[in-house]
Length: 248
Image (cartoon, rainbow, N blue to C red; front, side):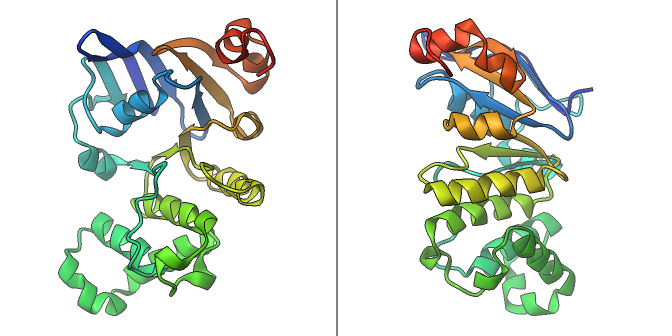
C-alpha cells in the first residue's frame, strides 16, 4: 500500500484548473520528485498534499485514510512534515530554540515550557540529535537570522524533522543556494532518506536526476509522465514540455 496517494485530485479556481485529475502515489522509503515547467501546477499540488487547502474534487489518502479535508496542522500530527521554499524559521530565536519549539509542539508541551526547557532532558536530547544529524550543532546557540543562508535552509528541514514525520515534503530545498550549498543539501537529503520517505519539488534537474527513485512530471496541471530518472530523461512529452523537444 502507498504511504500517500491521490485519486483523481483536481483543484479549480473558477474556470482555471490548477491541478486536473491527478492520481499519484508515494511509497515508503523512496525519494519521489515532482517536476514541471513554470506554471505546471507543482506548488498547488504540493499544497494539496500538505493540507494548505482541500481539493475541489478527488481524494488524498495517507496510510489508507482519507485526509482530503484535514487541516495542515492535523496532517503534521499524523506524520506529514514539510519544509518551505521560503524558510519558516523564527529569525530571532537561536538555532537550537527553533528546533526545540518544534520538538515541544510534537511532544504536546505548551509554550510555558520555555522557562524550564533545560529541565526537559528528553526534549533537549531530541533537539540536539536533530541538530547533529543536520550538521547544525556547531551553530546551535547562534541567532537563526545570522547563520548562512544554506544553513537556514537546513534549519528549515530540521524543524520539519522535529515533528517526527513519516513523510517529509520538501519544497524547492535548494532554492537560492550556491553550488556548494546545493551539493551539501543533496548529501543531506540522501542521508536522511535512509530514515524518511521524501517527496520534493525541485527545479534543478541535476538535483532531481541524482537523488530521485521516481519522478512525476506535471504540465498544465496534469501528469504527463512518471518513472525513473532515466525514463524521464528519454520521454518525448517531457522534452517537449521543457524545451520543445530538447534534452531534459
